Length: 368
Image 1: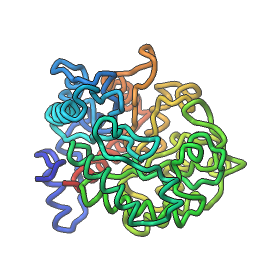
Image 2 (image 1 turned 180 degrees about the vertical axis):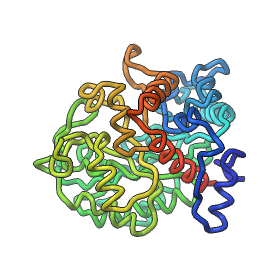
Image 3 (image 1 turned 60 degrees about the horizontal axis):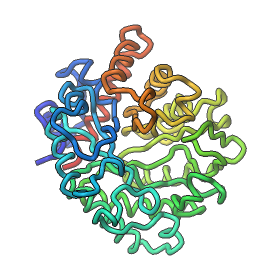
């Protein structure tokens, strides 16, 4: 049984099986459902999900297309038992199956830690230095098989940032890049994607169009790479796309005036997403944003305005981790209402929502 297969998308899957392009996906669903699929959210601070949890109601009401879990959602006393229970409850609440996602790159970006009984991981920098694809595949298998066993179907990995700046505080210093050589980055990333696909886990390459040359952390504010970014940072995306191994791509909140003269962060930039990623690189799949509540976005563009800008730039799934103070948190219903108001006012077109919905449903239909 296809994990993502429901009555609402059965005919999409059937058409794909017979080798034909799906023509119209959205006719059988309404605008509210389509908008909901664009929203991916954190589930709160709890490690024990009660049946009365607000997130379950949001999912049942079609306001959520996916969720992301963090270490704070791991129950210390019963980590594996409660994680399976949580994911089962989330999955059962959804009519259209959810993206159940996690940041599990390995090394320092690792939610499922050995202290909770999960396998040991290695960071990309260490694996890139070894440059042994069998070793990379071994650790990727440990991760992918664990994710599949517990019910995750999306991993925000591998990281394909090229380590241009060795002092980069959010990439190089954390060992998140395989190498400063884009060929090494691409070869290890392709191995990770292949292993995850074997276990029916979607991978999301990040952070487009390249975060490896930045001097600043976009979690904390604007990261302008106009003077440091290199064309080689696009090459892993080009090579992996050419190999047919791209399931999803995540945008960076970096500014690069050479790619966008208006100096918008990539996540909000039609130049970067529609012109370069979709136009030049010919990528037709799902674009995920990095967390929309990171300060590079939230402190400079406003919550509502940034949502409108991201959708109009061409992103498909917006991530709201809600790892922020309580007064800054937003529920899926609030986000859904903001998007719907923009559609009602004509500031976001219905066609733009349909495009994203179609891409999302096609991706969900491909993984068992």
